[in-house]
Length: 229
Image 1 (cartoon, rainbow, N blue to C red):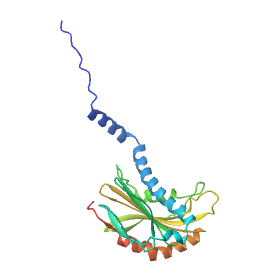
Image 2: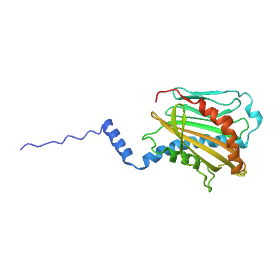
Image 3: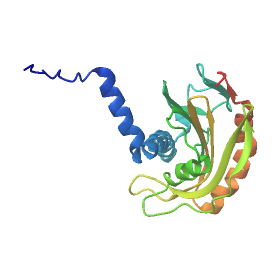
Image 4: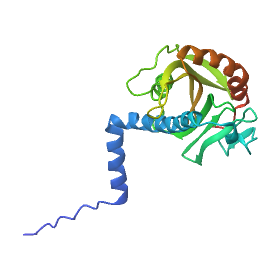
């Protein structure tokens, strides 16, 4: 009688990776976790701008006269002289930066991040980006319907809304009118937030009209992609 000896199964790196990939694809939370990562980076940059606004003085602009910003291989844009590059990160697969106006009451935040799978509802992504700027216990409102605009030769989804912005404890309320724009190009999801702030929602909307004409639209018109996507 012949005795059969079982050969132990080999775990192997390839099998481990295949197993982990299967788990990631089967978990419902994977998609939303990816989106949350995008929003978190955008929110961090925006909140740093809001915090800077609360402590802004003209002396903070000494030595700043840049008018061009470029993320190698991704995009480039120009912005008004006197605006401050407040936060930046140039480390793919995630890149973002935040600009603050010379008066401290307007900001622009741009992020490019690799997400897999790519978000399928960019309008929902825009609304979530605006919502995450809201002070805890408050809800953003006056969301516009999604519209399509062309930036850098590519279609972007645009949503606007109002929010009482997050501020440090003890500080007076700050309101913002926000335009969120998102697009997918190659492996990157791009999100731009244009924010005007004031002491009331009505004043923020009025300020946005001026900021949009004088700063936001020229800045967006200068945006160019540096990769073929």
